[in-house]
Amino acid sequence: MYGSAYRTVFRTLSVLACACVVMAASASAQIIAGRDASADDWPGIASLQTALGHSLFHECGATVISPDWALTAAHCVENARIDPAGRAVQYVAEDDGALVRFGTLRIAIGAADLRRMVSGTVFPLSRVVVHPAYVPGAPEAGNDIALLRLEAPWDGPLTRVDGLTALASDDAGRSGTPLLVAGYGRTGEDAPGEEAFSRTGRQLSAPKMRLQEGVVPVVDTVSCQQQIDSLVETYGLSAAYGSVRISPDAQVCAGAGTTDSCQGDSGGPLAYRDFDGPPVQVGVVSWGLGCGRPESPGIYTRVSAYAGWISGVTGLDMAPPQP
Image 1: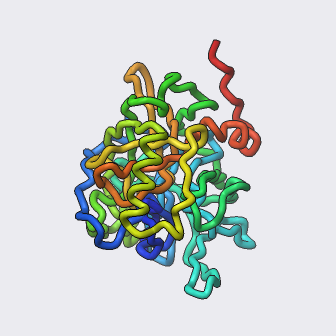
Image 2 (image 1 turned 180 degrees about the vertical axis):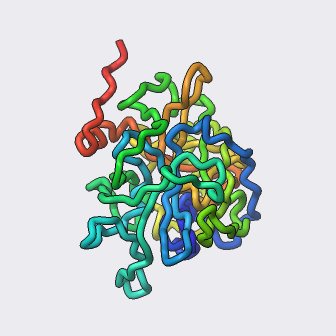
Image 3 (image 1 turned 135 degrees about the vertical axis):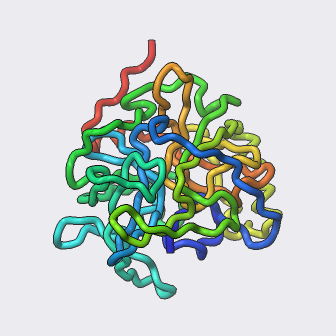
């Protein structure tokens, strides 16, 4: 039941979202070649989870960008609602479109291993703000970004966000500059999920318990569009995805096969790092056609394009333009 990977054009593999439109047998699956990551290298990294009774389900990634707010993908929370007690609740859609309550949403911050979440790093959510231009069920149409308000302030490390709390290199996300992606998602299209008990004795389910990271090269928009168009034709998806267009201003394409984000990574960070300081988040994991397939880049929401909207919701100041 853990979700999140609209990197799958067929939306039947997860309760939520999509970091990987996981294709039905049209091509052989490849291992998503990442490595174990240190949470210290990813300040503000978080797991968006649903709590149902004594069970916890990792749904998506997220990043904490201020003491009160976290950033994720819209498709991860498009069915979330605030209950009468003022807490965010995750709903799932049945075949007839009716929404059924699944469980309460929470965010776990800074865990290198989800089995070792510690007291003071887990917060319920009191507000969910999906970008107003996002089309439910269609992250491929763009504007796949959302904000989550923590029920209480977080006093730990924060993610630096391009256009707001930091400025990335001028060419970050716009050339062949390698970027890094991190999350708790699948390590292969067909990789089984993992089950464990948390430190508090709750049953925990996640695609991957251990935080992973990997380097993904940026793909220019023209090449990215050509590759997506080719895959749509190859997989016979023209009726649903033939009109998809990649926006160089609002999206980043990254990944040339092998290393890639996948289901469970949705909502997590794509970051620029020059190793002179902490990473700067330039993208949010959104969608793609398969995971780690040749000439099948991942599509990420470009956060700097939404800096004004994020500032308006959260109160964060926008970064001054570079001279």
